[in-house]
Length: 340
Image: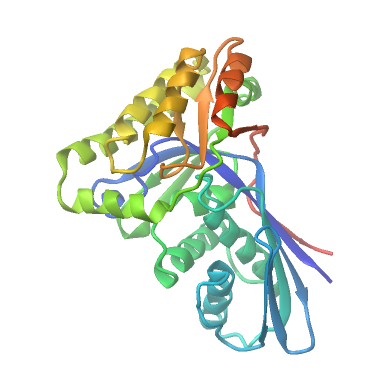
């Protein structure tokens, strides 16, 4: 028997960073994101020999342990261990014996929410295997707590909910970790146009998002006016993006992205750097009307809105920077799990 699951990665189209506490607790956050055809997958094979095997196929890491109620957090495959430890504790389970194998289509630090999506995929596989009573909101919130509370990894709330629900969503964030996911019914032709015009570009660099996020948190707690203004403008951007997509005003998408990028850079140090600025400028000079760095910033993926027939020119201009463009489609489904 094999239990499998898959959860999609996401593009944060607007409002990024407003889902991070303490800003979301104090002022409320709003984000518009959409899942894409890149995934985190997990597979569980039950064992009867009293062993636990954790296997990260994309990172080429494999560890073997005796079946115990709590795995030691030592820096190796922390996400895998964190999910297991929380489930044993939360549901008063006896130690389990299994092999867990995972794969993520994007590297850590990519800005596509890969770490949180992996937690959701692992949780989905365990939930399928153990028949756990987890609805979508329950699972997304549990994934958030494992990553942010149990493992003390810095970050926001959007990724866990995007991976669980899937599709295009306008998300609202409130104090006490309250989240409301509003699915948007975007017409197919608008989504197809968005996917065609949004060029997804990997800079072949990564960043440690926790450093940027910690700087952002400090700015909020210190009442930094420039940073707070930027976050409030990004909340406005999420509403602007929602209206443009629902009404099919595709000519506004690039402008809205550029509006957000200009303010996002003021949220914290490290969100941009000379290389990213040069890439952005080259894309804009060759026909893009806006874009941004995906996720917290500092590296990883960028994407640019290329209206009309400018897509090829922008892709050509980006080649000199040594990165790669990535083909994708938007997806309508979130976490899925099944047993074979």
